[in-house]
Image (cartoon, rainbow, N blue to C red; front, side, top):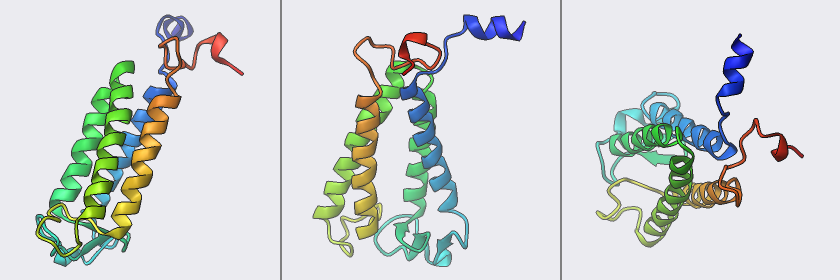
Length: 158
């Protein structure tokens, strides 16, 4: 019986699964930013601004605002990944946002008051990789037929 119920419901597309994975990654990063030990200098974390001394994994400068942005982005991704079009939008638009964050970080001095999120050089490289990675997933996993490569489609198998 469960077999018949599964057959009647279409599977998630590859782009939806990728969006779910990326959203989960952001949720993990957002939570990890609030865990002492995973985040070094936890006692020096500020709400926002370049004065925050907290670093996720000892590399990526974080603040309460930065962690909340990761959590919010992850939650948005979970919601959007429920639909094919939403998954594409999350990955492509999110990739564009992260490329813009990379440009922002590259153009902003680490100790500048404009660095309110805050970001450091390690964050800049991460944002560059996330931006290109999300864009690639959103664009390459969406096929021309518009199905996004459903996993239960026999024509989509190699």
